[in-house]
Image 1 (spheres, rainbow, N blue to C red):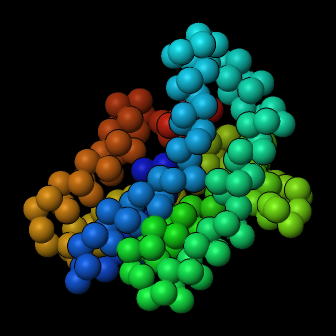
Image 2: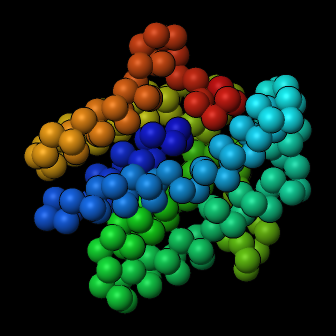
Length: 195
C-alpha cells in the first residue's frame, strides 16, 4: 500500500487520544518501514542521477536493496519492538512499533512482484501475494479502490477521535497526499513510483 495509507491505518489502530504523542508515534511507525526505500530512491535519482525507470526496474530488485527491505519490513524486528513497548508499558513505543508491524503485515498481503523477505532473519522466503496494491495484473485497480476507502474511513475515524486542531490538520494533510493524486489523475498510481 502507499505510505500515507500505512500511516493513517497505523494511527487509526494504535493512536490513543488520551496520549496525543501516540498519534505522531503511530504515523511515524507507519512511515518507518518505507524510509530506507525513499532514501535509496532519492539518493539514486537526485544525487547520482540514475533514471527512475532503472531505479525501480533494476536497483529496487537488487540483492543489496532487498537485503535492506528485509530488515525494515521484518515481522521479527517490528514484533520485538512491539513486545518491548508492551512489556515496558511504553505507549509511544507500542504505537510506533505496532504501526510498523501493521505496515509490514499489510505489505505482506498487497505486494506481488515487489514482495519483501518479511521473515528475516529466520528465513529469506518471500510470499508473493496474489494481489498487488499497484499492479493491475494482480487486481491493483480493485485494491486501489479498497485502499481509497480505507484512507477515507481512517481519516474520518481519526478526526472523530482526535479533537485538537493540529491533529486534524496533520490527519487531513496526510490523507490529501493520497487522495489528491487520485482525483487529479483519475487513477490509483503507486506513490512509490511503480504504478
